[in-house]
Image (cartoon, rainbow, N blue to C red; front, top):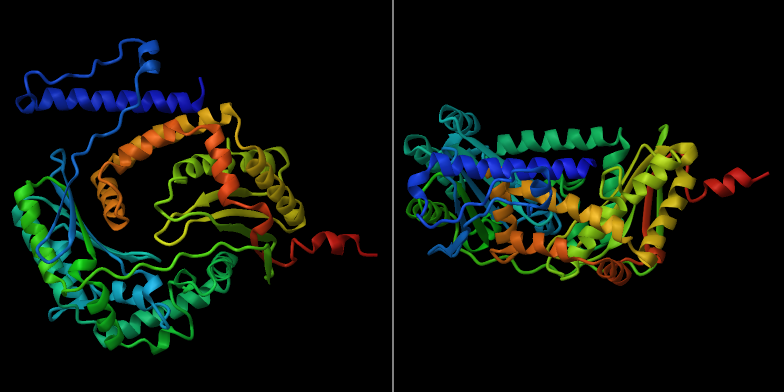
Length: 478
């Protein structure tokens, strides 16, 4: 029995067991006529049973101040997850690379007269956790707390003070900038971050996605508290916020909490849409000299944005081509059969204004040229011919089975709600996408890849002691 089939059976059994447990533990909440899915009684029944997924009742509304709210009530665990998502990522940095990252990171470093230690101790004493992060599109704040009012309400009160009156203290900002500058210095000692920065700059060019999210040695020293305050008032507004709530609370409480959080934010509208990032129209190559025993390579180009109808077909196709496991074509051909690389995988990163397709590989220096040539050949062959029916079936079973795990925990659910709200996806998006993955055909995968990925316009960026594009010429020189 294959690993995928075993995983499928385990997921089916787990979902079925969960349904039985819920039925037994909460009989008073079941309608008398509620249909109960029969528990599989034999191996053939298990194999034929449809894959399950946690069914979510997503409720949505808009607060008086203009924030979009998505809420899922879950009563199994006495916890509340509250996530605020702002259109305030590094694409909004303008001429000050690192401004969005610093603004987000400084929110919990002092607010409403409370210093960083007081805020941290306040959450810790309540058993609550506050997390924050910033990306190219979005900036996040996530609170995880016990749902009992004696813990939940004071934790939310602390979060409200942070949202309403961040202090951006100069001393903490100076410390944070020093830490970030030291991190940039350390990144010069390893190839990965240098390669990633160079790839993004070459791929996005002057588009806002090309701004280094973590700032630069030139930009960070000049960023002052007043700039953070301006960025906060412009982008951390009620109209630019999505509030996702998941946990053990009623809709009445959810509405009250959403109003509390939303009204604490400055008034303001949604951030304007970003211009679409254009795909490269010709092949480009860039190499960074670096003294190492390995060569790291990234190659790819723009494909689609988040809303493109070809996304499910490309998602499935990417899984087959280089989606990370050992059944993928790139892993099988380049690593398993020929031993040319330590690792190789491909990805599609759909964002608001772009969806880059990227292949990443790491190889011994002596193998870099051969690995790169073979990788390009495999990409071109996949674009021309697409997957076999067997490859498609294997990928769909794997994707649909693993997709069930996307709602396995409340933290998973709140992350999904944040994405749905931020990208204005329909509330049925998770079900729609799962069904779309199952219905994709091999011909649709072929068509989507031919439309959106052109092997003769790939960007290649490498880092190591020798340029893999020149290695063959050097080896053949007299």
